[in-house]
Amino acid sequence: MDHPKEACGLFGVFGVPKVAPLIYQGLFSLQHRGQEGAGIVTSDGSRLRCVKGNGLLNDVAARTDFKDLDGHLGIGHVRYSTTGGSSIDNVQPLMVECIDGMWAIAHNGNLVNADKLRLMYQESGAIFQTSTDSEILIHLLADPMYRTRPRRVARALSELRGAFAFVLMTERCLIAARDPLGFKPLSIGRLNDAWVFASETCALTQVGATYERDILPGELVIADETGLHSDFFCEPPTDAGAQCVFELVYFARPDSRVFGHNIHTVRYQAGRQLAQEHPAQADVVVPVPDSGNSAALGFSQASGIPLDYGFIRNHYIGRTFIMPEVGQRNQGVDMKLAVVSDVIRDKRVVVVDDSIVRGTTSRRRVELLRQNGAREIHLRISSPPTRHPCFFGIDFPTTKELAAANRDIDDLRAFLGVDSLGYLSLEGLLEPLGGTRHYCSACFSGEYPVALEETSIKQNFERFQTTLDLNHQKTAS
Ligand code: SF4
Image 1 (cartoon, protein in one colour):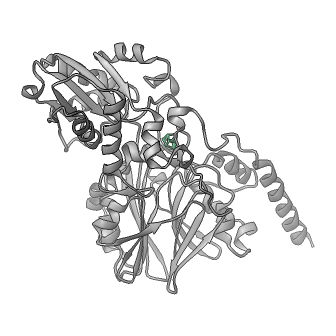
Image 2 (cartoon, rainbow, N blue to C red):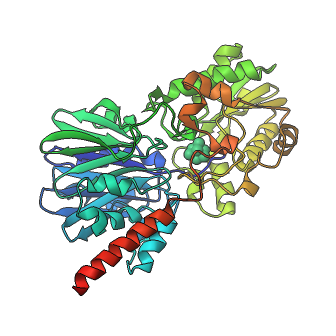
């Protein structure tokens, strides 16, 4: 009923005479991934042009000349700020001019070694234009240690740690990449002779592109005049990975295919499993729209308890966490969901939702159900308790603020004011998806798939110092 903040959405196209309107459409269907800012960069083969601004895509489009951007290749981004503030400087794509041409980049995820790399460059005199972790890739690309060597982008990407999906472009080519553990989704689509990259397949469908495949963890894909080329910037992927399970639970749209699975089907199966693990004696199953819809359907069909719409969502308010102040957020919650009292009055109600983060929104909903005459409320959550923060690009609150972090299930049930509470087990969620070894589930389990203290930084720094020394010697001689 309350949720972590969003990540970001990426979209890129190569090979359409006028890409900007297509990128606009693609980003529109990724708006659920970020509402703080939006931007598009295009190229006609000789020059990059950029338009961006704060706010929803449509608001940015109304204030700018998005659709007039010329070019046959381009990238776009919708942003939720997980690092850096929400100033216009941080809205992506970021565009820069290097000694050998222009670059634009758009990023989804969090780089756990960005602060250290940033400090390293700042100590050597580099000036950063934004406070985002994404900018570090630009500095790596401009660094002579990478710029002057073959496979420059692959070498630069190999220095990054943490979670990332990138789309990048120069004047003449488009590049897309996923981190070695595959935290963030990124797919390839085909539109006649054009190539399309998107965070979710719903954006491919939106522009009429057919889904080709996912970019593999550690893979770098280049689209240019000669076609599509694949490279790996790390060891080829193993069977194991760290795909973000929250993409499946909450973030992605139900019509998307993410990490090889249709999101609606994943949530529906989770609901069925939840009914097995935590049955309830009840009269009606009520979903919390929209992300609880599929799981509620699964719960209803597995339990035989009829589904009905006890909550109606107002779609015109946007997502409540857009509002930064807690007071505003609570007010937004009340405006977002209304109770249909005829559905729940004098009934034993099973409420199905995807997750509980702070718990404040859930408590408010429970109060509203009681006020509208629900006789019993049985809350069922189609994921395990969220007990740990995320360091990989999902803006969870601190551990202290997480409702389940310091409470056992009984305390949590009392805190939420429900008659019973049941969470889906981690095994129940992940076994049908191939098992835990493919996924990051650290916000549930506390087992982080990437060391948060970056140990390779020292080696990095030493290599960097060596290059500086060599350059200094060259200059001196
Ligand atoms: S900690 Fe949770 S939200 Fe963050 S990447 Fe892992 S599964 Fe996703």
